[in-house]
Length: 177
Length: 102
Length: 335
Image 1: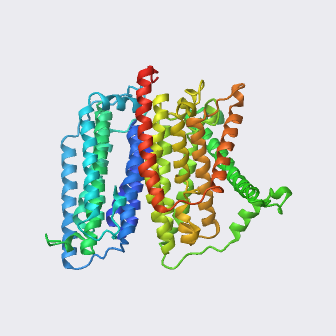
Image 2: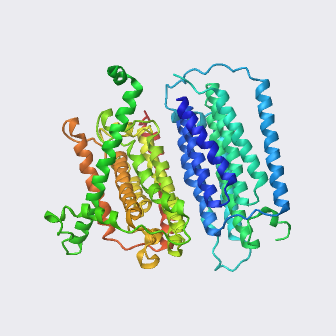
Image 3: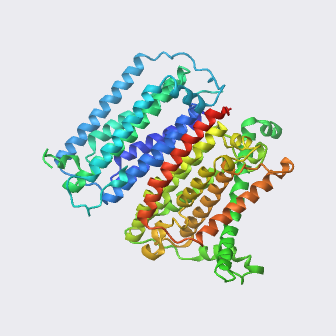
């Protein structure tokens, strides 16, 4: 179990590093897919089957396909990252990252006492069923708001995608919906 | 049954979040910046699930569900903006987009 | 010593998993090659030809000859292709289809299911959404405009039809009250869900055709306009893998359709006939796929999008609402 977790975690770490290091957007996107899939694996190990599979369906199956579609549609080449301003900004970025990491380590070192021990999950009903029950009772209002959010996003995308008064022959980014 | 310690998952989540932050700071391709934001959201999701497991509660997973919905909406809108930006300026590099006028 | 290892539960788990994987992998490879044979034979008879009949009796050895031929073809790498992605794409075509077989109950009893997980249907949906990558990436990595067009078409097509496919299964979920495919089959012991959900079944089969890029939805490889679509630049076993992936996807999606709508292994007679019933239903659906392919002309791209977004999606939403209301009125409790 621990080894499996370590394997997933290592894949997740390496592929998310490659997302930000690789020069080609398509390759970055593919590594992000790999990262999301290994994250789904970790969710499965944490007994969150529903979230794990939704992670694959929504992130790997829909969101990243949209990313790839846009990258291919725009036909983006390798990123060129050269010049002094770029180098300065990159240096600053890595320094900021290192500071954040140090901060996290310091915080972890200060409060290192372990929390309450995790017992076995109450598996009287399926994980999906339990989530559904909570979603439609306790979290009904946020759930409905989410649908409103999606509607707004949908309308917004169509409006943005249509562009301003361009000739109607211009192909819209209608595929974005 | 050997369980995964909470601290491991949290450390993983923190590192992924930091990778996302660095990605936003060092890259100038808007699409990669966007992907880094997705990484940060996912790091937060991982923390939610890990804490939910620790507290024996489903609320963490339900929050992940909401975060995913928001992320999906955000990606659709963001990608539409990037496509529009590319049509206007022929670039997806954020430092080349330095005028408010289109 | 050996007995201790043998009785170790972890070892048992891994051992039986490997055995099942081996059986499914080899069985599916055999099934795919003979499905290609069946497709050529049926196509031949539908067009008043005889189909392959030279290699072996009735041409039965034709698939073996085909595979051997594919192995000895030249591997071709187009100039300017992204080499790694070009090689990975065909593999991605096969893997999701194979993973789907892990959750399909081929017969009664735990021995005939790869893994009875409580999110079985979600695994199928996830894998079918991952299937997009093979075609999209294969088309993009080839550095060929026809391949790229095929790849882009396929990503738009598969995303659009995935929605309707996912929604068409919700009716079944409402009736069965479980995401586990084993539970769904058990829920159909009295009446098959195709009787209660005819609309959902029709939508599922149409979207299945679109998801597997079979005619009349084979726009990604429309040979009249795109040469060969996403696999224009592929040759030898890489092309073979795409081919294999397509047919495996057809078989996987037919297995899911049998499980969700046609009662899975349920059928008259003793339970031990379950595997036979499953095979018969599967054969009927596979014949349906071939039959459609050689009967209908290809859709135009705008017709494809209209059908997906304006017809199938609203109908499947309506189906969910009607099913939910009917369940509430009749008081059929979700178990």
